Image (cartoon, rainbow, N blue to C red; front, top):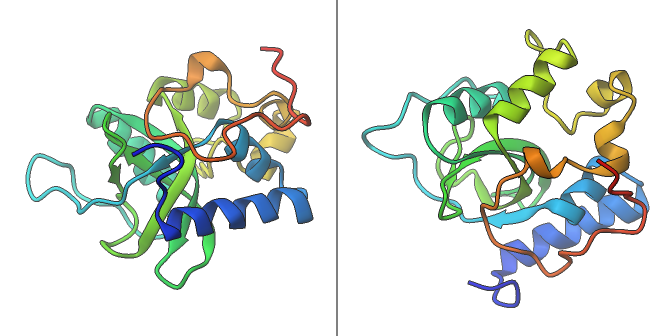
Length: 180
């Protein structure tokens, strides 16, 4: 499915993230628009997958699963069943389907986020000393401690994976400077 063949839910999610980036100046939303990809919701595998984690700990759950299964750790936004865009983290298979270890099936209708290598996220977590309360690479409190580097330049190329589908605004906003 190309960027011009999006579902209504994917368009709604891209619109909501765009509004966050432009009206509230949310730096995480700007990074997701510049580097994010769309992902397809899928049911949790009946066999061969680790157990799901506790709700409310999506970043830790996604990182744990990404270290076990092939694919990517993804961080960005999900469109909930109620139609609200929420910051979230999940895993994605190479084909762009979602493995969401924190939310139950049907809780999200669309996903837009930056796919990252688990090794990059682990190194980031260790560098920022957030192992016990890991809230993600795009968390504003973590970025304040890390001088906002990712908010200024985006996730570096060596940390990203080519997983998921492009979205219609798949161009870097001029506010990000790519100087890694």
